[in-house]
Amino acid sequence: MIDESRVAGGALSSDGVAADVALAEVRQLRAADRPTHGGRLFAYVYDPAVPGLDDLAAAAHRESAHVNGLDPTAFPSLLAMENALVGAAGRVLGGGPGTTAPDVVGSVTSGGTESLILAVKAARDAHPEIAAPRIVVPSSAHAAFAKAAHYLRVALDVVPVSVDTLRPDPAAMAAAIRPETVLVACSAPSYAHGVVDPVAEIAGAAAEAGVRCHVDACFGGWTLPYLRRLGEPVPAFDFAVPGVTSMSVDLHKYAYAPKGVSVLLHRDAALRAPQYFAYADWPGYTMINPVIASTRSGGPIAAAYATLRHLGDAGYLRLAGVTRDAVAGLADAVRAVDGLRLMAEPESTVVCFTATDDGPDLFVLVDELTARGWHTQPQLSYAGLPASVHLTVTAAVAPRVAEFGPDLADAVAAARATGPAALPPELRALATSLTPDALTPELVAGLAAGLGLGTGALDRMAAVNTLLDAAPARLRERLLVEFVGLLQRPAW
View 1 (cartoon, rainbow, N blue to C red):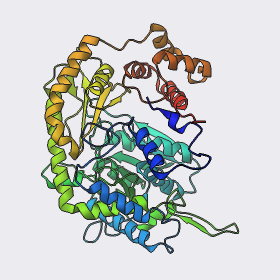
View 2 (view 1 turned 120 degrees about the vertical axis):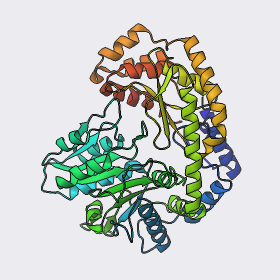
View 3 (view 1 turned 90 degrees about the horizontal axis):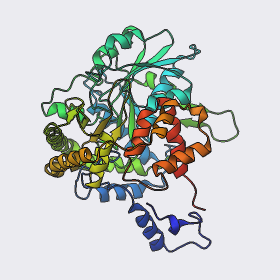
View 4 (view 1 turned 60 degrees about the vertical axis):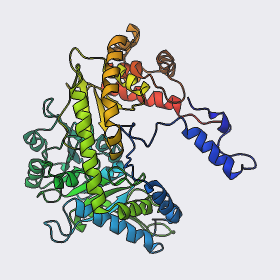
């Protein structure tokens, strides 16, 4: 639990505090967080375990923290660094001079979600004649596509993925394209399971229909090309594929830059043009924005630039090799434990596993791993796909692989001994019978209390995850909104 007494009354003190006091408070609050380094957190953070890289990135961030990306003519340093990052991403993903996509252009965004929202915006705004635009995505596509559809009022056509291959059928993707479709999307790889969609077939179908195709490579775009160079059988997924019109790649993932920096690439400038927002019909400055934000700190961009310059192509190739070996070791550890199975053979930097029919309760297993210092990401069941455990693997994990196998086996034994998460029958009944509209504040508060939810992080979440897993998707969404809302309260 986080001790918020130090910040009671909010961050604004009457007379201010000494700098060392403020910094001490930040450090005290940070003590409750998951560890961002050390190779024991398999989600949310990306650690290359490169000595001095954090200090370099922090220094570069400090140099440009107050530079404003609103006007590139006022701060040409930021423009130069953005163009350099776009060029690097374009090269890694099969574009640039000497390729079949020589005119690739792009923009630096705050993260993968913004990149995907902008890809949808560009596709939508390229067709103002379509009154009710639609996008086609596989069910394994990142939830940010649904967020983009919600924000931009674009209909979302979801194509199921196979429970065996975890990929969409290209023919089903093609059949989902309508006259109102403005964008077809696929993943390289999907976040949940780490498998690469059949990009060539999907992009070909989109091109035949005259529709844009976006490849979401936010998660794997900076590793798949290096894995291919290391001899791994990476399928075609980038701008070398005809029909791929845009791509996204997060530099704060496997380029190991600090958060948040992503790059959205388009095959040419004409495809990017609808992404911009411009407005002159007011008495202030003419607003022109390539991304959603207007004011943007140059700090993250400078930190990413310094990171890429320092690590270089050879550094990324080495890190990809280290990560590949760590993935193989973790996958072997899963295979060695009775009651567990891989959801798919690893193709990228993800190890995803589930329980066999006679295996342990996965949510209890996640808690047992947490108790042993391993912070994994549980994924709930969906449309015939079982609940699973997701491991995002980074280079920092490599020294820890030998420790994981014995701890995993021990955690499985403990989960079997504990048995399934205890969920009162009345709560399970509510999860399967309630509608989102029936949730009252009183009912939510009672559910939260019954599950032990309060402020701060919880290490035992099996009961909560079991309740959410039993709930239909719409109710699950509403419950999470309400539960998170209980956590996000001001310190008065």
